[in-house]
Image (cartoon, rainbow, N blue to C red):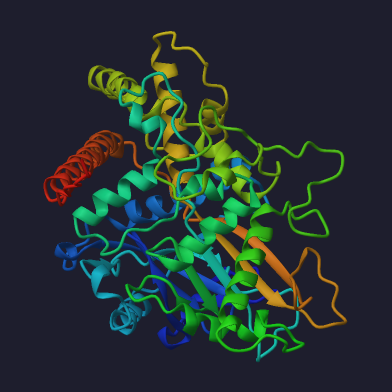
Length: 504
């Protein structure tokens, strides 16, 4: 039995799987990824809480259905919504259990300590086989300058515009910026990120570059850079931008060598930021990044309400600098369109979720017809696309809005992969990017990943979490205001008194 690998016609034979051919690539909250040392492919395996290390929480059949649901959701739901060229749905596979167990032992020592509260699934052998998006196979690879890959988690790119929003602060400050305060207080991060997603999704190149710079300065788990498939930047508390610049010099440093000293790191990082911005704005059909397709409107979706976040750090002049829009077919425009399926906000959706819950309690067999747990097929997509705009009190409306919200949540938590490979003087890649001042050219690809379906059951948790984040942010604002007032009075109390004598 073989698993078809769509990479230059290569195949991977299951009965000859060797754990030494694979290496640790990374992991998220629910899965772990390993990459093949020769083939341009990765395997994505499920993870379970460490207390389930001795006994699988689900049968092999359930695990395979879980994996197949992920593939189907990517293929049948997210691919049509985000675009054929951006989404790679992969293939569900069953691996030999001996191979999986040996692989688990091999990668354990490379895993971050913070992720070891969960273990790799070694019981089912089920996995998703995907292309390795940190590599490009369409051009000659230089040993001196192997492919670079930038992974960005852009997060939610708009402020809620729903009439159901109860706290006015949610219309002024974005979820990401509020959540940063909550995460800092709970010890998730030691330093607060100054990145704001509304800048990245603005379509204004100046604001976008500002946002990318903030991601570089405080990457957390929202920004990573890979070189030749190896992680070289991101996910660490200690940020070394000078060290990163040294690694990127062969790609972005001016070939004329006119810039020297401490300015060189700044030049290299600025070039990187410009290239990332260009790739995010590109529609892939143009010769240069950021140019729209001829004959089609430039503008992508425009969120209602304000276009900037009050917690952001941008100067007012930059925000006043006219209206900007994302090009219609660029990757951020596609993601934003999917995110905006959340038209009610969690506050407006939660009562509809409760309506569905009451219906399922009364008619439990309806769970299958309403596709609460899938299957994620064309019929599910129709429910999302054809949901009525007004609430008619029906269960169909409630389910449609719940499904739209789940898709929006997936889009709010997805990642964008930008893979760059430098090209020789005689290569004319399409699409390509030109960067200044070096005039070097890159072939590149842009992909969207981390598109798992969000569980129906997580809606109740999201409702509670939203309230916690907003209330904590409001309390922290109040504390800052009280501290500022207190400081003002203290300054006045300690002011020196000066007597001025006038001659009589």
